[in-house]
Image (tube, rainbow, N blue to C red; front, side, top):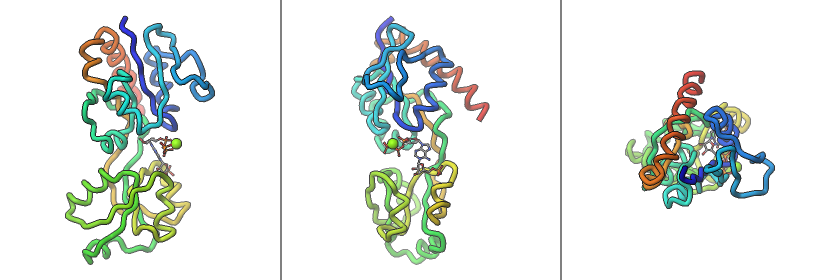
Length: 219
Ligand code: PRT
Ligand code: MG
């Protein structure tokens, strides 16, 4: 079997990815949350795992440094998806991309007034497309984390961020005012690897498709 490298996203997606991989028969040789190793072998002699910052996963797969990856749709849209085959919705890392403001801020009135609105986000590309599609003029401010703080300190009128339970918004007196899209994690594959390493890639895709369907049906 041809050697395969799978790039996994660190953080909350990883916790949901490992059970999926295990259900597909793939188990790391070490505990990924404590191991200092950057490349971890698995029970399959030809398959190794790397755990990356979520935003770096598409880049590794695009250039073929990793053959297969797991990344959030948010990360893929922001990356652009060039050079990536996206065959499978894994049904994990489920959340929604939303526009949120401070409680009491009249978003609808601001939008109708047509003045410029400041929106802070890590998702500049998605936000630009969302507001352009609605012919809204917004000034986007790029942030790298803690978006929720921006409206509280007056950096921005609104944020574009991921929401899952809604607890973070609630705890900070923020409220969702627009729903942009649902987000889940996707399997991504380097197109060259799909051709040249088909003997290894195809069985992995089939196994993950089977377990992802079960996971999605249960959700
Ligand atoms: O460390 P880094 O800056 O790279 O990312 P991170 O720490 O913000 O997130 P990480 O690494 O844990 O995982 C990021 C990926 O998980 C995203 O790309 C999504 O695809 C997926 N995901 C799913 C989420 C959430 N749900 C989510 N709720 N990523 C982030 N959040 C954050 C959100 O930004 C907000 O701050 O959780 C907060 C809201 O959660 P609730 O439950 O309070 O609504
Ligand atoms: Mg993190």
